[in-house]
Length: 335
View 1 (cartoon, rainbow, N blue to C red):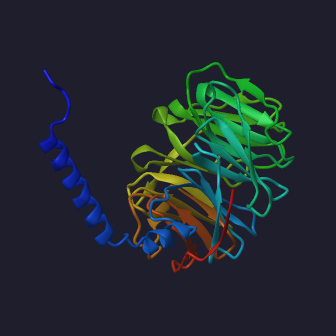
View 2 (view 1 turned 45 degrees about the vertical axis):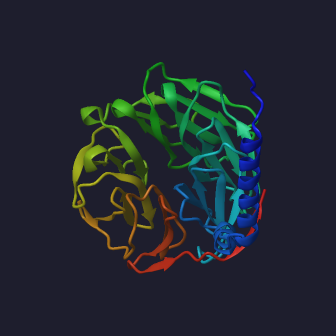
View 3 (view 1 turned 30 degrees about the horizontal axis):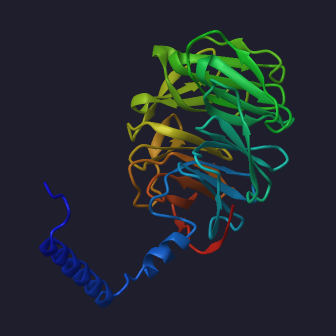
């Protein structure tokens, strides 16, 4: 059988090719101006912001996809800083010297300078997944996460010291209240405390009903709050020995708790915010039209705080409920 292309077949292919060429010559190239303009903005509608922090002068926000944003003018304008892929910054904290540290889902930490513009990565420990980060007053970085383990580093993440509590539980929050006292909370109502700057940690009584804390905030050694599943917010006034629920008018889970001076706020599901008034967490009208949830926040000063979430949600909220929307003026992108 002759498998060569017949003359008629070759003629048909030639005509088809000519038609495609003529059409291509007649069609205008697509106008990508709008696409390029959108890509040039520091804030994208596709950004999913997962974390935030402030050193009092600079705000930073971490995304789920290879970027950290910073603002040095109270959130009026933002600069975008590209991170080596893959990166997903799930938590951010500020150290005493004003520098930043961020937890990356891909088992590393990002160390940022006080301007929030220069970032470098350090690996953590194989097999460890960090869920929370803080700096103690001496400048050590602390990570809480999987396998009931804490990691600490005194050299900006170059080396790590591990403390394993021997349980199969996720540690989800960590906070140093002062130079000596710190608290960790986690899965199954786990609570740990240190009174010697992290040299040793002791187990506290379990939080009730195998509580899973999304966020825990202590304002001093005795008074603390923890938010978890189903909108439950627990309160302790004895340093975590006992916990009792408080009313949450939103009935929604709060993923972040913030202290703005004496006033406490919760940020969470449904894009809702709540504010503690007496023994009740009342709805706080931030005036925004927000997506499904607020993932994190950071206090800038006595009058304003940053709140972040998916779908490009990056907003500065005033304490009175008035809102200053973040603008999309770019100040450049750093590699």
